[in-house]
Length: 345
Image: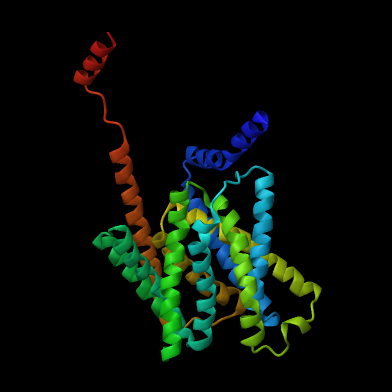
């Protein structure tokens, strides 16, 4: 038994070992995770465009995503990529219910609001996260960081917001979805630190609970409120749609894992900035792969947003350099060397 535990402990260090190897090669681990999240997120959006042309059941698709993500986590655990750590289920309920609220309220916001208002609500998640971090966690942001975030939000607004129409019911759903999503993103990182777990260990428990909660909502969103020409149970499956859904599900595993990896190593604010870059990438992908038109206003917005993202990235790099300088050991002076020698004697 002791030998088995020892082997499991050694295998559970594989993620730390991988991060150590990346760092030894002068590769920024956070940047690697962020690039993985951006690539998988942009890919899944483009794949889902094909899926949802034929399969008009978004909540069911989300359920499939979580089933495959959990299977992927089981496989990773069996190969020792992470050690399953016991976590009290009660502690995870706020995180799981905030995820459910994120999915449900986003669906309602899309249904009751114009695309422009929905995009505006998505953009407002960034300042909302900053506000919550400041009020509840005492985290302060420099004026330069605030300015860079304002430029990012302005640019993404110009690029994505066209028709801005709102109504009372839609506004309630939109504002509530922003608040719930902001807490979900913040908790995705804070729970890792508070519970002493890594991204995969936290997801291992959160995914099956969220999977069950999503399953409960399928009759509401994919049956009762769905306006598809055919009901879910009459959908005609074919090889093409099965392969597309499987591809979407496989990508969702990487999306779900890298979200927690990015937020765990950086912050919910940095993840939001990366999300805006993903939106820009999706717009570019639409032009390249789907022949979407690119209006001058959209192009200007993309340029402004990219400028803000690059400025924010520069500021964070400067912060990292300052932190490394503060944490670096002080150079030895002749006096300190002499003192050290005398103490050894």
